Image: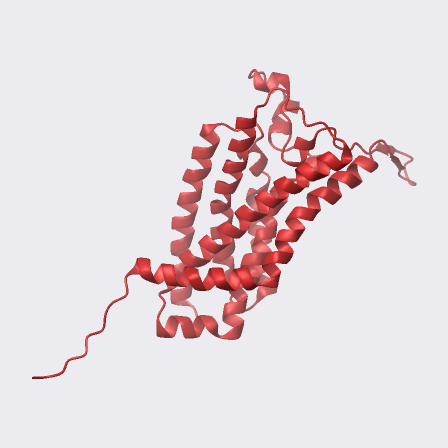
Length: 282
């Protein structure tokens, strides 16, 4: 009787599950992960307090003599998004309302929770570049993992990190508002709108994370190139975040973000896999 050796083929689901265990273990043991989460919590507190203290202060341009009055936040929800006007709520959008829906151009409109979409790029780029710099990725692809499973695992890990950043920023924004004595009046909004806004932002991470993963696997061990490329690519969509996930979000915004996240994750995930297949792993 002949002895035969049978090799069991590992299913894709088991391979992805195994990769996720490794990535989550590395992520939760990484100092970078906790530093970025701490930044997500502290940034809104410091910004809200500082902007409130600077409210009403005047700066003068020494060359032109033009005075600029700094306007601080009046409402705690401004750290999450631009409050809609009554006209916008009733469908009477003026040019000013349209600008507000797109996020406006004031400091609080630009430097709000949407910054987390850019901050997560730092985590993903350094997380992936470390794999190639240490030789872990080359060894991984040689002995067991498929490149598709690697991309899926990194996308999910980045999504979880991004979601946690958004949640902690929200907590920090509420703390900053309370410390600064800002109003928590919702006006024409409701708690349901705020919850849907946050859900939409979390789901929108599935649009940005695949972009950062694609740039990172292309840059490989060059973390600086990955970060620059990711921030540049992310800025192309950044100005639309406020319009896609406004404070008065509805179920339509959630569905739109979910559909966009699914398309970007699948489409760019396939592109990331092809990049790994066609390029050198060192």
